[in-house]
Amino acid sequence: MTDPHPAAWRTAPDAAPGVGFGGSGGPAEVSFGDQVDELRTHSLEWLRDARVEAVREQRRWRMRELAIVRVLDERDAIDDSLAAADGVSVREVRAAVETARARESLPRVAAVAADGALSDGQLTAVTRLADVDSDAEWAERAPHCAPAELQRAVRARTVPTVDESRRRHAARAVWGRFDEREGAWHGGFVLPDLEGSAVMAVLEARAEQMRPAKGDAWAPLRVRLADALVESVTGHGPERPPARAHVLVHVPVTGPAEVHGVPIAHERLEQLLANASLEVEVVDGDGATVAMLPTTTLIPTRVMRAVRTHDVHCRWPGCTRTTGLEIHHLVPRSWGGTDDPNNLVVVCAPHHRQLVPHGRWALNGAPRRVGALRLVPADALLGRLGPDRSPRGAAQARGPSG
Ligand SMILES: [Zn+2]
Image 1 (spheres, rainbow, N blue to C red):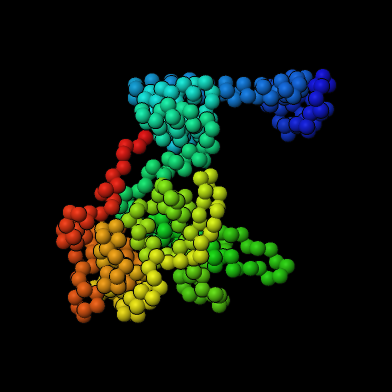
Image 2: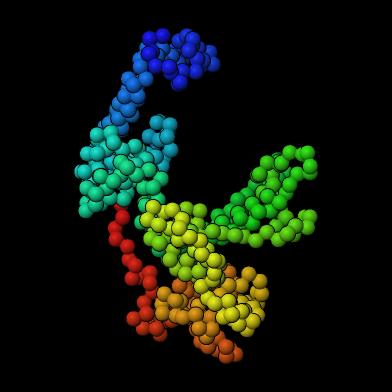
């Protein structure tokens, strides 16, 4: 052994070339083994430097690849078949094309990347974040940011608009098909952000309650989730405490609110806030927790109680649902509405989603007078409120984002 340093990395000091690779002995393995053997003759310091250099070289080659991708893209010679050829996902190929396109407008970021200072994750995220004006700033910042941090900043840029939020909702579906050979149903669902999280939270809470008998092993989670689904839908099953959906919506000081890391539209958040219990966490500039404030609600509980006592069922015309009711602002707060009881009614969750500011409908009229509440198009309510009460969404038109 010529290595002067005690090498902690060396797990098999006497390994011969090729040994330790399961004996498969393919050409790649042998050459790797030879390389490893040669590297064993070097000092720890030399190896550390060599690793840094190898990472840099990889990144420079990645830049070369992206430059080639850019030219191929110009010639319309890139398609999804590249993914199969490279053994990567179609998404990765498309991300590479986007990154290659963005680099031309970001000379400073491109220079830092060409120098090997950015990982692929950092580069992909920063090309979506930076624009001509912020190119120099991001060139300086990006090498010191974790890719996850940059991705988070990207997401914060892309708050869904109310139209996108409606599309998410409109795409909801459940499907199932009976497989005659297996004698079993195969199926799945598409549910928007919050509803999906609520359904999964209930199923997971139920699955968590399905403890095995003492001494028995836990059934796999997928099996318990299946049992939880059947129990939830059919109502059959052993007596269990009701599983309530507890969906945590993270609302940072800047950037959009998120459910499971997925941003939700401002209009959707507004509807949620009226009904949520708020756990306020005060953080300092570095994101460290300074204080946790007592759980509270936005609308005073006595006002909520008064509204709930008056409205025994959903106030959407014709709906008589009495469970899962939510507080709804006739005139949304962002449109100038208040928490006055005369501006509040209860509606069921599915109808709440169809009402302003998220939905295309509004309930209009005096909620405490019999028969005085009407369903009108959202535009009609806006027209009545006048131009000074325009929705917050319109005022928050976002700038172009990469
Ligand atoms: Zn309803």
